[in-house]
Image 1: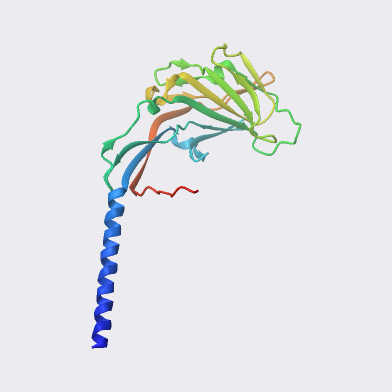
Image 2: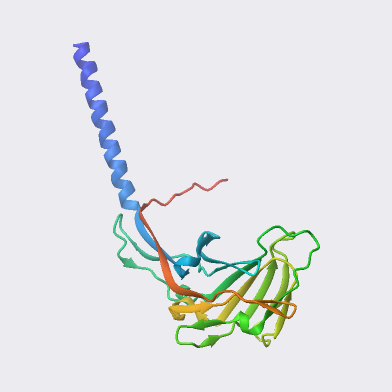
Length: 233
């Protein structure tokens, strides 16, 4: 009798464990949800494609200068729903109106000795993008940060209420951020181009004009379980 009791207890325990597991799975499905998020990015033509800052970028080398060009918006949810099926439209229109910006890194192909001046100059015409129909669009805000020693140091800022200067001197490797407050990712021309041209002395360091197509990158999560934490006293 004792053996049968032990065997019956084991069967009951296993059944109880199975019920608990099923209940836990059911609860997880009840409180979880699926999501679809998106981010805008600019896809360059195939021969210049590279990766930078976690996104797609254009890599161009010309005249001993290395250019990396990219544009990437913030990521945000566009659909939510029950597990596996994100059917509820959650796209906030205001996030689709994020200001369009282009980031342009300018570096020599090799290391630069501290204190070396590159003697580069950016001219106003090189700070514009061109839509597919030929319209030239000038940025309304420009900021320049150092990329070498003292990386992240702001070297120059041009504000939207000022006229874009004819020439901006650049003495070292930098990242130029061009913001277009009159454009948003949702209203941008789907195709545009940018020519990363520089001047050094009287010489124009020409680079190929790169064609871009504006696209959205989607990320699907079939089951997301929110985490809850007890307050700490």
